[in-house]
Length: 445
Image 1: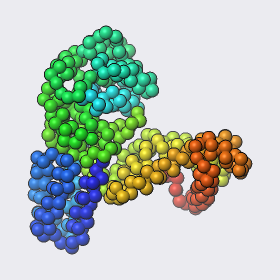
Image 2: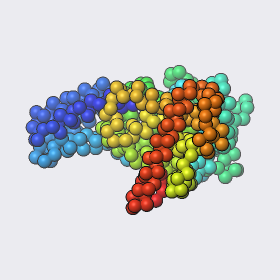
Image 3: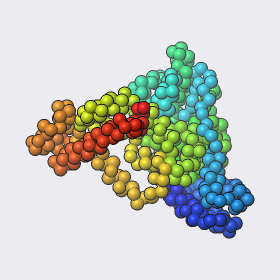
Image 4: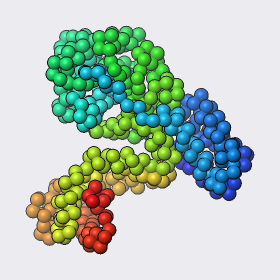
């Protein structure tokens, strides 16, 4: 999302780091470029003005100008200011009441219904017992969509027929109380633009449920319009936070950097994909580091701990010790890695990878295509073939190629990759016995 901004800021800092000492003129020139980069990223101009003023105030002080590493000092100041602008610390949900009500609001097309289900899934993982209320009675198939999502994550959906939205929300709260559910997420109706009728209905739902949280779902792709929408909703409903969707898209990032300053409410979560687990808590400091090309290793580690199967990693270690790595194990490991999301998303969280720029994107797409092809080939094999690859001859390769929609040369490529991986892992497994711990990356000590 912040690719262009990251690239431009990296260029500025590279020039500053190249100087043994900084003058006020050097800082002023750097700040001009930072200001232009932020404006081009669609950051609100008032936010840019305040940010640059704060950076200048610290950057022209003795701490920087007399420092042995002035370039690094400026980077730290910019990082701190980016984090401060986005809220400083992670803003958590206030869920002290039982049941706590979370009102999900926003315009049509922002992703409210999907986000409500994603948030329910996330809360369920945290040990909560959520229930969903289908209060969008106007959009065709909205209730059916929420029911389908509810079944996917095993969360009940309250959707009484021929009932006005405020009453649906109130009945959901009553149902939650009677069934020992501690969170009610109310999916409300949106429209193509803010209007009095929509706002009045949301106010009636608020009166009926007294929500602990009123969260606006805003599309990051709309840029500054998302900020204007947040301000308009907050004026009527007193938002407690914002969920930015499509943060993995091509938006320039201005909304993420502007919302807190403009409407005074924090971003609490960000949508990072279409899958039901594509919702992450928003950490301002981590996001600031990603913007500056420093990556977000902490989030990547948390995702690995949450999504990867530790028992499979331990089983792999045992097999490697006995030199029994098979195509089935190869398939299992690729499927495990897919749980972390697209390869581009993983690389985006690694330090310095954000500096690669758009020129690398086709390569990443090719790499992801190759992974999908490899999975298709492996899944087209029989269990016997995956356990004993030596039986895969010419006729079997043709059958596997037909079943996976690939060519025989692709099957040969997968088998060659497997043999390379097997040799490499055998070497690493041998080194492990000499005191190294390469499998720590799998979560196995």
